[in-house]
Length: 153
Image (cartoon, rainbow, N blue to C red; front, side, top):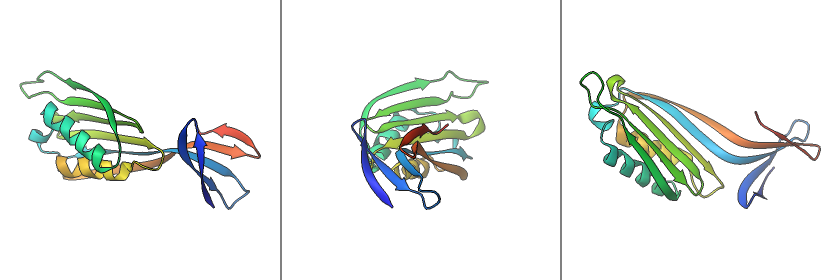
C-alpha cells in the first residue's frame, strides 16, 4: 500500500510493507554514481558543466535555487577539475570531476514527488559521455514501527 504524507511541509511517500505491517516514509530519492572514461574536454569547463547541471535539473522537474562552483588549478600540467553544488528547492545535485583520471562523481537527491532524480542523473550522464558508469539508488526516510518513528541510519 502506498499513500502520500506531508512531512515538514514536503510530500513524502508512505509505504506499508507486507511483512509485519511496517510503514516507512520515503522523504527523498537519492541517485548517485561514478562515471568512468569521461572525455577530458567534458570535465574542465566550469560554465558548461554548470549549465549542464541546470538543464538536467529543469528536465527532471527540479528547481535550482543557487549554484556554487569551484574550478581547481592545473595539476601536473593538466587543466584542473570542477566541483558544482546545485541547491534545489527539492534538495541538491553535486558533480565533481577529475580530468586527470577521466572520472566524475554525481549525486542527485530530491524530495517530494515532482522532481525525478533518475532523469536528472541520466541527462547529466548523457552529456558527459562516460565510457561506463555505476549507478546507485537509495530511498531516504523514516520508518514507523507501531506508531513510533525510527530514523534510518
